[in-house]
Length: 345
Image (cartoon, rainbow, N blue to C red):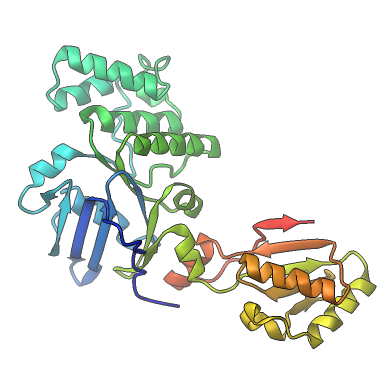
């Protein structure tokens, strides 16, 4: 498994401007090194997801970049401002939604919004207009005059992000924004994040939900032992992990035995790499498993081989590594059982 960071592919054109960049960020607490020299470059108007096990340093990274704590070493710029020499400029350009809600449950949603408007030094008229627009945008109008402590988890999260947007930030840090939310609320949050990015906002997302990163992020980095273990698009990261395969299942034992025998004797085309010498049989399930990267050329080679030996499978299932596989491979955890991602019958 490669341990170096995967470089951003280059198409020869100019790179978009960076909303966030960092070189060699370091942070320790006592004798524990949390960040051991991480580099980041996040283009404006994109979603960047930072993954990692608990305690990997995701929240520490957000706190440093948002000027809540100082780094022990390295440099970083956020919205063109140096986090060490111009923290005020950074704070004026960003919004932060932490793991724990900043909502005051003892006052109403509307009062929370107006309080945030006061903190941003908006006039009474401008503050009320902004609060009204954001409450409408986040579907909180009916609950606006109810105490926030009566809100559901998803409503509190929506209010939390609405409060973050009062200052019209162009960069938003979302530190595990959907933790504890039910699936419907999580999908609603994904919709909100997509809408923000479509409006030109840059989102720095930390999450423990790998599906979330896969759904939202333009680029993903995996943080482990204080370092960036790998970075790239979701597809690039998935290609780093071996283990793809095609599973052929048969409803009748004679057909299965015939296919297994043919596979043992087969030399599949060189396109299949390690699959050319055969696959793994599963006698109980009447299934054969052939290593395969999942490319169109490899799948065609398998189908052509099936035709050439006169074998017809009842079920043809393609498995490709997902972000779970990437995460476990890069962070040294136990692998999870392979689950098919697509089935063709």
